[in-house]
Image 1 (spheres, rainbow, N blue to C red):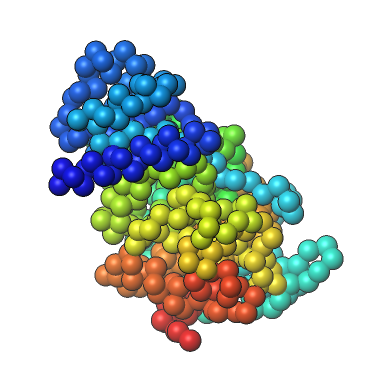
Image 2: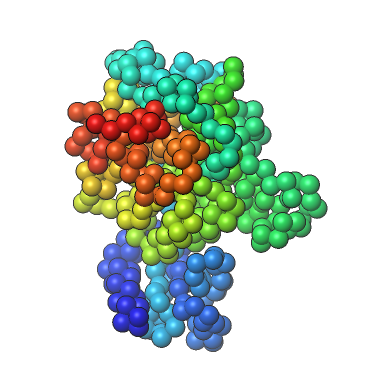
Length: 430
C-alpha cells in the first residue's frame, strides 16, 4: 500500500512539473494523508495562506501561493503529502465561430430541432437541415416524460430559478425555504441553499448572471406547456451548483466542492458543460466518489475541434464508469465544426448547433457548443433512470452508447453515433 501511494505521488508530481504550468491555475491543491493535520505546521503555514477544502472523500487543502521548484520539491516529498497539483481554472468554452445567440421573445417547440428535426427548423442562412436527425423525443415521451423523482444537478454558472419555464422543475430545499435566514436549517453545512449553492461567492444563492447554466437547465427540464421551450424531461427536479462565475471561469477547488455537494444533495445525474485545465487527480477523485454513489457524470467533449484520443480534454476524458463524454452535431446530423471528437474517448454525439433554450431574466436564446449537447444526454440518462432505477452507472452509459444511431457522418468521430431517447428507453440496438 505504501509503494502504491509513492507511485501515485510520483506520477502526479511529475505531471505538475512537466506540463501543468502551461495551464491557467490559482494556487495549489494539496492532498494530505487521511487524518493528517500537518498543514498546521509552521513549515507549511510559511508557504502561504492555507484553507481546508471540506469534501467527504479526502483530506485536501488549498495553498494560495506561487511556489518555486525548491518549495514544490520539499512539499511533495513530505511523508504526509499524497500529492500536490495546480488548482486549475475551467470555463464553459464559448464557441467563437458560427455561434448563434439570437434573442427569442417567445420560444417555440417547433424551433427545437434537437427534439424534432423537420429539416426546415435546423438549417442556417444558406443550408437546410435533415429531417429526423434529432433525439427522437416525441416517441420517447410516449413511454415516459419523467416522474419528477430523478434529480439533476447542473454544475455551471447557476440557474435563474425564477425563470417561468423552469420553476416547476426545480428542487426546492424546503427546510431552508421555511427556515431562518442566515441559519443552516438542514444542518448540511450550507446556509440558505434553497435552490442550490454558489461556490464562487460561498453563498446559498446560485442565481445565474451569465445564462449558460440556465440554457443547459432548459435543455434538460424546460416545462412542457404551451409557452416557451420543452426539455428532454417534462418532469424532473433540478438544482443549480454555481462554480463558474458570471464571466464563465471556475477552479478545481470549487469544482470538487460542487460535485461533492451535489452528490450529498441526492443528485442522480450531474450535467457538466465545462472543461479546460490539465489532468487533476483531485477532480478525478470527486468523480470516482460520485460513481461510487451511483451518480452519472455527463461531460461536454470540448469545442476546440480536437481529437480527444490524442489530446485529452478534462473532465470528459476521465476513465470512470459514470463519465459520458458528449460531442456536438448540427441539424444535418454531422459533427459540428467546432466539436471535439474521439473514436475512443468521446462516447456519443447530441444536438449542439443553434440550440434554443432558456436564459436568465425569463428569456430564450439560441446557443452552440458541446455545452448544449451534454444536457441532452443528461436528460436521456434521467429518463432511463426514471424507468430503470436499478441500472448501474456503467450500464446506463453503455445503454446510451449501444442504442445510439450509427449514422455514417459520425461513425469515425465517437464510440457510437447520435443519441436516441426512444431507442435508449426501449433498448433498441443495431
